Amino acid sequence: MRTAFYISDGTAITSEVFGHALLSLFPVEFEHDTISFVETEEQAIAARERINKAAKRTGEPPLVFHTFVNPKIREIIDSCDGVIYNFLEHFVAPIEKELKVAATPKAHRTHSIHENSYDNRIDAVNYSLANDDGSNITNYEQADVILIGVSRSGKTPTSLYLALQYGIKAANYPFIDDDMDDLRLPDFLKPHKHKLFGLTIDPQRLMDIRDGRMANSKYSSARQCRMEIREVEKLYKKEKIKYLNTTKFSVEEITAKILSMTGLQRHKY
Amino acid sequence: MRTAFYISDGTAITSEVFGHALLSLFPVEFEHDTISFVETEEQAIAARERINKAAKRTGEPPLVFHTFVNPKIREIIDSCDGVIYNFLEHFVAPIEKELKVAATPKAHRTHSIHENSYDNRIDAVNYSLANDDGSNITNYEQADVILIGVSRSGKTPTSLYLALQYGIKAANYPFIDDDMDDLRLPDFLKPHKHKLFGLTIDPQRLMDIRDGRMANSKYSSARQCRMEIREVEKLYKKEKIKYLNTTKFSVEEITAKILSMTGLQRHKY
Image 1 (cartoon, rainbow over the protein chains, first blue to last red):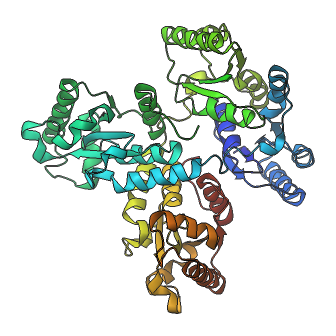
Image 2 (cartoon, helix red, strand yellow; image 1 turned 45 degrees about the vertical axis):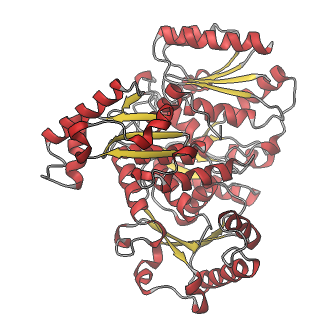
Image 3 (cartoon, one colour; image 1 turned 90 degrees about the vertical axis):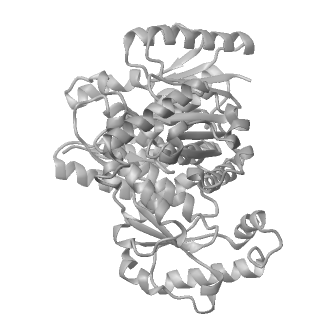
């Protein structure tokens, strides 16, 4: 299998995202290899060695996605037996021209700590953990958003992703079986109605997920799942709460849709 | 302030990463605006309108980072009053030539659910939550990695990031004041020594973080923080446990360094 390398002097997240976006367009399988924190010429030589070995082993030149701005290190990587793709090369000059400002490569630290965004995110993670799954209903003043929905509709991973990636304080509150006879918005959520966002999910998918946790239970029965989903969706509509069906979406997509539907402010861009 | 737009038919995460990597090279501030899930011509026309309004308001053409492959939508966005940067344009053809395979744009769903990676990640998040902060010490068989360290050295956000981004089951276990008199590896960790990874942090930074939680306490005192850090670092060295000082790093960097130092296998690339 042909190898794709993602290399950088930092996390290499940018190289990975760049390379994946391109490779996902092709019906070809790759072996992926990330080499992060290549900060010295020695490390660059070792990285080149790793690429050259892959070239020999697979008999095909690896695809190498990188974003080096340091000319010395870049030269070493560029001299490997792989095929080089570096988007900075193509775009820095046109943007310099447009902005009438020279690039200052030292600032190239996309994923490092800056502008308090770190503390913001850690605070948000702590908030989201402390306010997960209805574990604390007295703290909603501080929430940026409160996700609501039935058990296993995606609330917890979405809350954590909002907090970790964007520094958004996301609480979440579950509706449980006991609520279902006469489902209404609990009094303590009413003052925060503008912050509520509902999640829903196809009953069949909900059944599958719940069955993985508690097989052959009432909790995972078709009847129960259908009833819970019907009731929460009725509530969302009656209370005019924005909501999203998460069935076909990844955490990234659910989060991006929530940001787009609510206009929530990110603390990290 | 000049505006930068990040636009896509999906989450726009790729456009954001692409744009940020470039703009972070310039000492210029931007107002950022993401328009995600532009999937129809109508939505593309609305996005173009938003760009054109920003152009009018700021008096400068916005920078527009996008990754559209659908030619109709792309044409609409490209006809806006902004300056267009689209890396697919530059790289698809060379990669087609190299792979001798035509790109199949429908596959362009970088951040959508595929290959069980979703279930992997949700399982990993549930595992990491259930095994956070030493809350469960009987489940380490299933762990891919167990982070250890003193309180507030970054264990929880790092565990969650490993789980959410890479589907890695990351438990974490804290050393507390009571352990410090004679710090040693607890018996229940010994069988899993190969999975242990230590976090440490500069005592001054630890003090600042702890002081934010519990001001003027023993917990946040200079003496206590220095002592705890000294003891855990001694333990890491004695037991030959790989470790990392997290003081100057973001969650992305800490995670990337752990992956690089341990060779941990990601479940999502």
